[in-house]
Length: 443
Image (cartoon, rainbow, N blue to C red; front, side, top):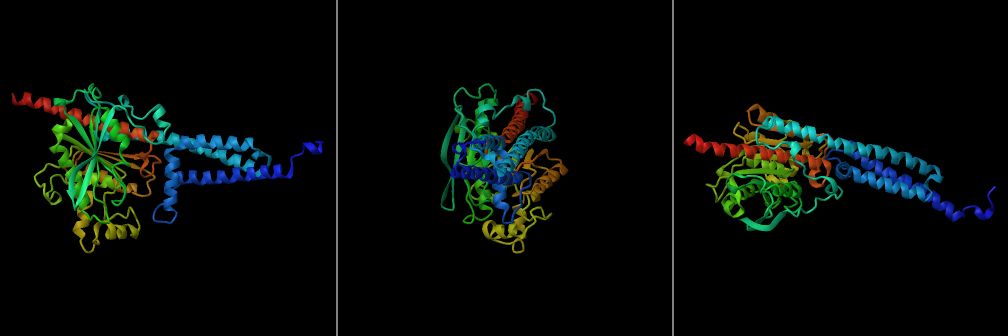
């Protein structure tokens, strides 16, 4: 029988009980986060916002959550959490979460074959001289430890270049170019580099070029491309089609300054996420439409490929993909300023699916299966309509992915970058082959 002096004091026993309960309650919070990654709550329900953020963080940073849970479990166990029953319940919960979160990481790796298949659907098998996905490796190793993408020392970023002034507002873009000696291993035709123009998301109302597209811009610039990340006017001050006009102005600016940038004006790819995905797709299917080019009507605003990520493709929601009236109300009050009943043509014009006619550039559409902000059914519809008219298209529905998954330097982001690099570089290789063949044909 332990001596009285060896028995823990009442205060010590209380600390142990308190630690057990703290451990148990903390694992319940972790369990809620994990649940949102597997079963997110759709908008516009009140829990939709918290569910999105919790599931998004857990999904894309699954191994970081595993590391944190291991640390927290070890810390509480050392402090005596298992001396009382709540601690044992907490341990069971923590072990279950470790397994579930590791499974999230494994599920993120399933993006690779899905993306690989989508690129093949759009372009077929790689031909001679075309890059293959197994030759591309973007974010790897230490880069995945830090959630936010690191700065690539091979890339130069020129910030806040004014490319247009609309509505009394200077619109700015950033230009990413490889530093001297970088990317020279690629034999670009005429020493001109292909261009990737990225459009940020944010529900047409928030965010800017500094917050999105950074991993893609750096990766392509390090491979010899010119990356351009552009701002556009935001609602509610801006009214559609102001946003689209600004994107087309950015395309026109790139072509006008191609010599200065060392860029190939005949090969521009456009991409973007969420609202940026919508605008990228809309710009791709409305080339040189003078209604959206006031003051620069004669500029060439065509693009050679489009890679929209988790975008919106039908403002009218004709197949009830979004499924709630708040969507129409938001667009009417904030973005369009007119209801579908007041101006149905305006809403059709804002919907990329209504412009599809078989003249579209190749599309690689990337979307998450668990996207609760931009329903994946819309991406499927866009891909089906493009395929129906014979336009090259690949659709990658990423298992388990939420909206905005590529913000973090995650394994899913790495696979996505690999696919975009293969898709764009294969297209550019084909364009170079055509350029080389033309003089021979003429002779």
